[in-house]
Length: 225
Ligand SMILES: [Zn+2]
Ligand SMILES: [Zn+2]
Image (cartoon, rainbow, N blue to C red; front, side, top):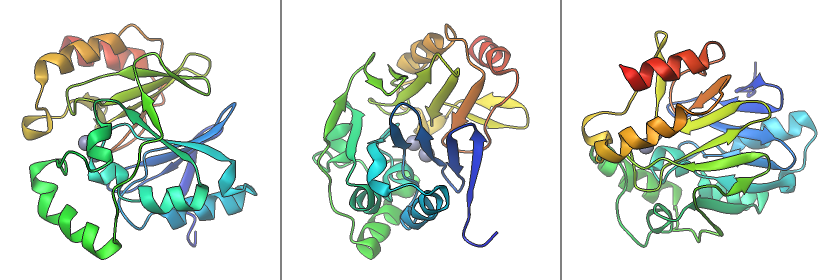
């Protein structure tokens, strides 16, 4: 296996698995979804080398939300690809460092330490996303709840849905964030109901496994349970 820590989950979508997952998507435009913890840029570089792709072919780094486990390698991946950084307008103040919420309470000391070790700097958000915006064939769906500016990305052509931390999948069940990881349960419920209207075949999560069968049924059960 060497350093090849990536899997083509479905055609043209490469998943980098870890404590948090991130993705390379080859669509009408190539883009990255999230960046994982610090120290992950090499995995993306290695994947691009294997595919014979130039890092600068990547146009956009899309953040599903601002939490550190999804933005840890943002600086390095931005340097590697020179891509624009896209985040929802309600999360970008946290991404840019203008507002100081390092994410889940339990992560705070760890975040501070990692910022120090990896010399992570605040970033400028280049693309401020809103509900309905498009990235290649993917539509941005604003799904506040886990964070104010959490988003999902949905492609009606291949029926892929990126959910970030809105849902995780394990033991055949979709799970919602809970406790401190769900500061706004009222909006979260509304957000998840939006997803129930979509025709989905593949769910790609920020944590845990991908859903590749019975996605619509699982979402329906998730919303109605
Ligand atoms: Zn999160
Ligand atoms: Zn996360």
